[in-house]
Amino acid sequence: MQKIVFCDLDKTLIFGNHLHSPKDLESLRKFRRSGNLLVYCTVRNKAEVDSVIRQFSLPYDYLILNNGSRIEDAYGTELFSRMIPAAAGMEILRLCHGFPGVCVYFYDAKGKRNCSLCTSWSDREKKGSALCLTFLFCRI
Image 1 (cartoon, one colour):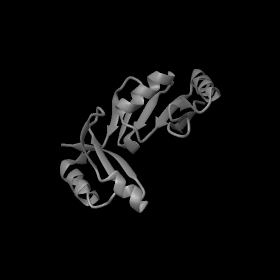
Image 2 (cartoon, helix red, strand yellow; image 1 turned 90 degrees about the vertical axis):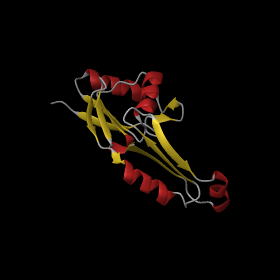
Image 3 (cartoon, one colour; image 1 turned 135 degrees about the vertical axis):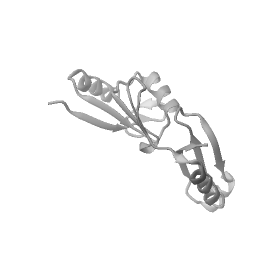
Image 4 (spheres, one colour; image 1 turned 60 degrees about the horizontal axis):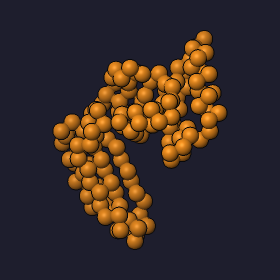
């Protein structure tokens, strides 16, 4: 019976610019060689994931990107994509504009940044407010 593993990348398999453990990578390769499926789930966009996959030679069958707004197979074929309409994206930017230390980024399906908003980093540090980093698709 074929099995499937869904694995986060950041702070699970990868810590900063390093693999958590080379043993993890070997275990994932062995899992796939046994005929099983490996899916990476991440907040990252396609361009960011591609660079990490190349850097560490990560094996995979599917990618769930941008917090689930895009799914593709190992050949880059899009299986699912849910874009935020431009009007909703602009409303998100408007609502977030008044909060110090908030960054909002909008990417297209290929990982190209369309627009962004970052309020003052110094305000965030002074007031101790939490940084909210959001990656979203937006059709503009």
